[in-house]
Image 1 (tube, protein in one colour):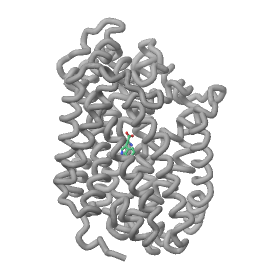
Image 2 (spheres, rainbow, N blue to C red):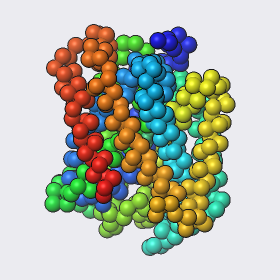
Image 3 (tube, helix red, strand yellow):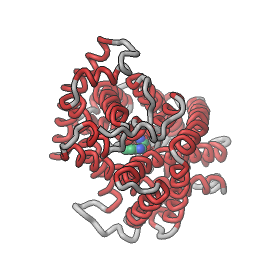
Image 4 (cartoon, rainbow, N blue to C red):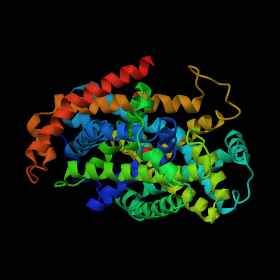
Amino acid sequence: MKDNSAKRASFRSSFGLLVALAGSAVGLGNLWRFPYLMGTNGGAAFIIIYLICIVFICLPMMISEFMIGHASKSDAVGAFRVLAPGQKGWRVAGAIAVLCSLFIMCFYSVVGGWTLDYLFKSLGMAFSDVSEGQCAGIFTSMVVSRWEPVIFMTVFLAVSGLIIWAGVEKGIERYSKILMPLLFVIIVIIAVYSCLLPGASAGLSFMFSPDFSKVNGGTILAALGQAFFSLSLGAGMVLTYGSYVKEGENIPKMSLLTAISDTCFALLAGMAIMPAVFAFGLSPSEGPGLVFIVLPEIFSKMVSGDIIAIAFFFVLFVAALTSIISMLEVVVACIAEEFRMKRGAAVLLTLAFVMVFGILCSLSQGVLSDCLIFGKNIFDLFDYTTSNIMMTFGGLVVVIFVGWKMKKPDVFAEYSAGGKFVHPVLYKVLYFLTKYVAPVAIAVIMVCGLIK
Ligand code: TRP
């Protein structure tokens, strides 16, 4: 077994690790996808199913992914070489997870570019005086244009590249420590402001009084897919960050805290958006345009809307940034370690790939919109394959590996940090969820998703 721990980078503190994990988890998934999925899937009932998925499926999976990284101290491909020597299949699965992160980056960076564009637009007071329906026009003309989104995407990627180049402690940890608490404070302020608007209570009751008549198979699928995406599971992120964690960390506790932060953030984003949507008499079921079309319209009508718009798009941009750096780290760590390449070179190589496919994804909203593969444009194809197929597959592999391949005493030793923490009952429940509940649930949902 090769020992990587001596020369390996690591997070300096538990708080640094937590904000880095939360930085990855909190992203466009929470602020853009969660509110519109909740809006189109019946509000509170969706939230309840989402929470059930987090506790019973995603949390055991996150802990498992964390353990694989921590036990192997290696990148997502190398981890399986260390833990299952000579068994190539697992390594292939690791490589698929790395590719998944790479592919997510291709469309995520496009939306990241949009957030930066909107931050600049709001700084230039673009939404201070818009009339009804004008915001849809602003959004459409931005996404279909050739240069504008590509330029912002390039800047977005360049910033993430610089942070990753700086390394784990001096890059990821340092910036997450400053940015994540800041985001939290801003989103709380916006949520409070939104909840105090006259007529906001309708938005809150939409979020918190469940109507189960709206629930169907599609809702459950959407909730699980969202839980996966939001916690950045099945794409090697938790594994890679886990490999930078020193001995003695409480892995189940860290995973739980990450899941709690991520869920709180999603709920806060909902509380920032839904009450305002209802207060201004707009529809919560607008779909993907909710954040980019409906919100700017609301900001234009709100008292101090200009400032709230700047704050909101700043949050959106930073959340997207701390998420994309985590995907970049997965790929860069893998290339640098597997091919013994310098970190800087690995960053450049990865970004070059993402630029090419990111540009294609961006253009697929406009000039290339007729170029369809399996009936989907390039952007949707990347989104669909990663979110619905590759991440689910990655998650399944991880729980099967920990539940069925690793030895039980080793798994329990990882849960308890070698006996440092003692929660025998909890560990048994966790192991049962990992070994039986999570794989079966994911397999069923995956099959339903594919035949749908
Ligand atoms: N969790 C992020 C979000 O909610 C998305 C994300 C970041 C991600 N890193 C990832 C998804 C790695 C999958 C894999 O926006």
